[in-house]
Length: 201
Image (cartoon, rainbow, N blue to C red; front, side):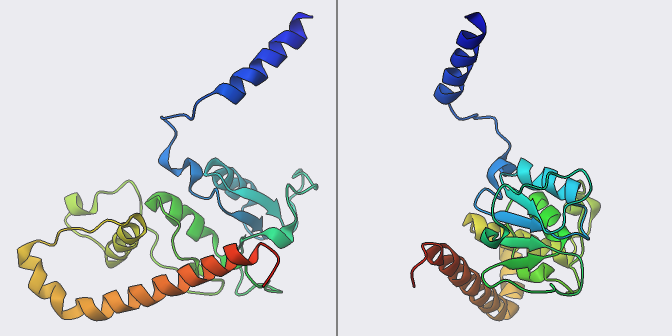
C-alpha cells in the first residue's frame, strides 16, 4: 500500500521537477558526447568527471570492478580518451584525445579542440584554474590562447584597449585566419558527425 504510493509519488515528483537553476555551468559540458576510455587512462577518475559533465562513458578494457555491460555500443562513441602515441585502430568519425583534454576543457568551461591533445602530440601547458594570472603579474601564452578559444566558443567579442590595438593589428590577421580555418574544420567535422548519424549519405 503505502510503499508503492510513496514510490509512485516520488516518480511523479521527479517528472514534474523543473530544471535546476543552480546547476553548475559544466553540468552539460559533455552532454552531446559519448566516450570510450582506453585501458591505460585513469578510468574511474575520467568516468566520474565526464559523467558529472553530462557525458556517457564506456571502456575499451574495463578495470577490475568496472561493470562489463557497457551503457552504449563503443562504435557509437564520439571520442576516445587514450594515453599512448596513437590508437591501435582508429575509428572513423571518432576524435582521440589524451586525458588532459578532458580536464582543460572542464577548467575552461568549453569543449576545447581535441586535435591539440591528439595521441602522441606534445601537450599544451596545463594551467591551474586556481591562479589569477593577471594578479600574479604574468599571463602565459597558453592562457591567452585558451581565453581566445573560450571567447570564440561563447561568441564573446572582447574590447581591445587602445594601447594594445596597434600591437595586435600587426599579428592579428594571420592568427585570426588560422583560428578561423581551424574553427571551420572543426565545425565541418562536427556537422558531418551529427549529419552522418542518421545512417544515410
